[in-house]
Length: 124
Image: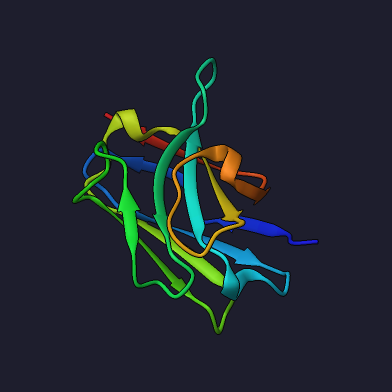
């Protein structure tokens, strides 16, 4: 059973940066693509970014392209989300997830394992 634990969320002013981390405890991390999603109350969970199993391919939502960077370190079983030039509309609970695929996927249904989430709040 894979377990994912996010960290790095917090309160930041608009224009600032945060780096989220997601540590995986299972054995299949290195053979799985990973993704970040976010959710605000009353709305569906939204795709943010994904990275393929070796890190060679990445995919981003249009709303974060050019500001966020997803990366992974398979030796550490960890995936990261570097968030720059943050905006108030980036405020959400951010979740990392592990997919049952090698390549990047955007659909939440393609992800088997989820972390508990970390709150990111961007003040204006």
